[in-house]
Length: 170
Image (cartoon, rainbow, N blue to C red; front, side):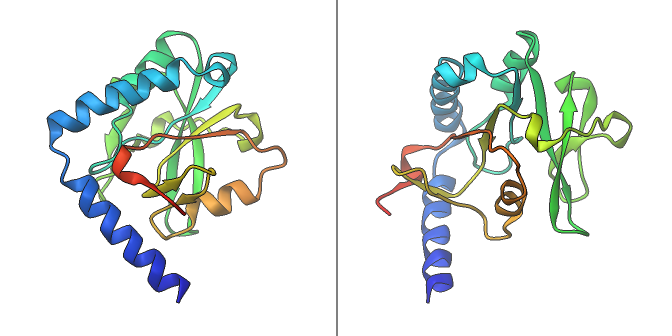
């Protein structure tokens, strides 16, 4: 029952999010990311994890580049599909070190892997499909981030970047 409910919410929210055109997504993403960059916890963070945008997610490219240019240590996910987990890699140069994988996901080229321990991350920007105002997140359904965070000794400060259409009551 719960799985069916989550699947329905995912489909509904993704459909709404996908209806935002590129210009709307770019304009709203700029506002959302500026809010992130002005967040007290972000300003205090030395090591920040960002997701790299896929499909119709909030666009993170400018925020990632800003973090790098202001001296933050940036960490991004590397999908280990074989073991169904996320590995974490440092990123120094957005334009030089990244490339699309065979699945179309942007990740570091293998020669630029610099693995980072989750416990070293101060603030983690998470992707997701839907979020409520109590901080609950509905992801894409594979559980990658849930498993990653479950194994943390100390949990980083978590931030979700979302369009208004992704905010749900519960």
